[in-house]
Length: 171
Image (cartoon, rainbow, N blue to C red; front, side, top):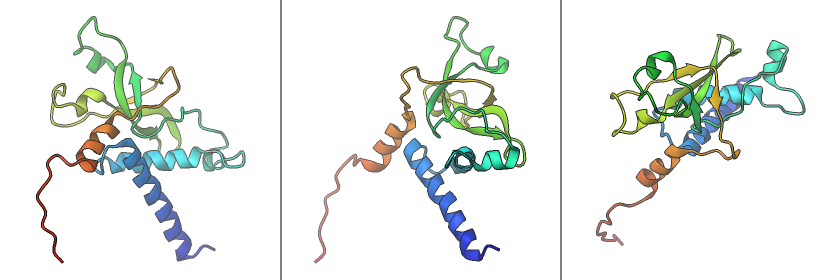
């Protein structure tokens, strides 16, 4: 039997993995529900010594594409969104990877959860909230290098000083 210490160790593992995913993606903590689900699915479907938890549970490997949380992908918009886009615009819309849609029990449905990039841009956004879509196919970068576009913005907000305040030292 497993003790309480094992439970805390597993919780810490999920917490640390989610924190890392949020930090690398540069999305801040508001999107933690997406990050924790993405991280858990990725961890359960990752091969260790030729096997994974997903295979042990469902008797098969998941056929999903391994995409980092917060990575830039392109997707073909659903009809409801495509009708509102300019007619001669490109078909693929840039989006941020948020996770994998699963059935209860974590079996993958075959859908990816994405948020269009324009929803994060005040100048291009159509509203105050971001829309998360479930899509069957995402288009990956052709050069194989992942871009984390929101990371640059978060770094500017949290890791740069805009104006230097005069400091007086207390001895």
